[in-house]
Image 1 (cartoon, rainbow, N blue to C red):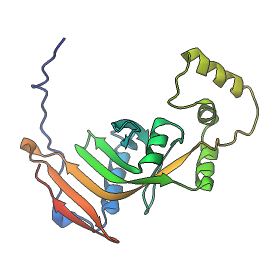
Image 2 (tube, rainbow, N blue to C red; image 1 turned 180 degrees about the vertical axis):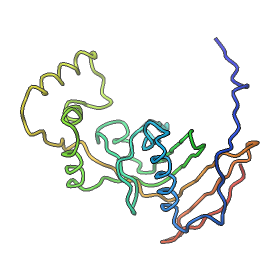
Image 3 (tube, rainbow, N blue to C red; image 1 turned 45 degrees about the vertical axis):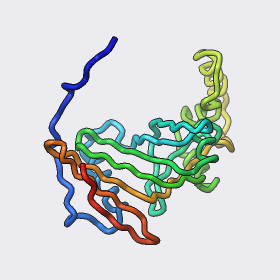
Length: 212
């Protein structure tokens, strides 16, 4: 069955993005936007971001992951290194991140290179997780085919009965994405959106306005 979505429209009226207000470092603007949406509690998970990688078959794949740490060097998330995303990043470190906060009519697109963080950093974060999340990471061969839902539930139930001090699996840990560009998008009326692109130039950043 076909469905025409041509009448799905809304006006964007909640903000502006002016050059006179821009910082020299895009991370400062990212932190400002993130802090604003976080403080308003208008998004269920403001740290949810789309991560795009290039799979081994050459096709891009996008999935939602959770941003867990913001640093001067880059943005950190955690995953199974043997998952599709982990294997893809190991083969091609170029990735794209995208945040969309509909409540503020804002989007940020970040392109950069991903690499593993230190084992200590991954272990420290793993140890801070709830027990259920630790068990989930241990039992899941992420992205692999399993027989049924019951199969993974049984694995969880069996391990949860143990009183061990659960250790981080070696194939689980963090990636840091070091940005080479940030694009900030602020929705505006009549589809005349504000788009500001920051690009790295050595140790500094240059920005330019893009046509909507």
